[in-house]
Image (cartoon, rainbow, N blue to C red):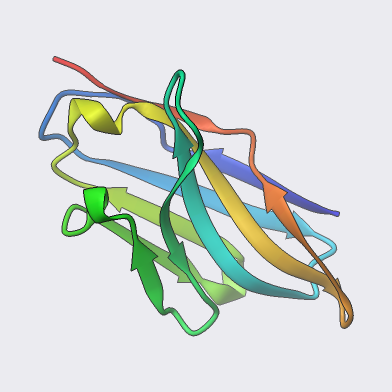
Length: 120
């Protein structure tokens, strides 16, 4: 199994910044993709940003130019740097990884979530 531990959420005023961190541990043979999702009350979970093993990134249109995802492969860590935060960014943020636990078996794993609140 793979465990994910997230940190870095909190409250911030509009225009402020936060950095989320997620560390993966456990039976990891190889990490493929790492990503951040978010879910606001009453809404579906949505992809915020993803990064693959080659550090290629993908962003939701709503966060392009404001958020930056990065990963440290040797440390099984992914970050989400969030700048110019808006009230619409308020949500529970979840770390997600796709990992091989052996050469032939892989799965998608989720963190417990960290709350981000943007409010004046």
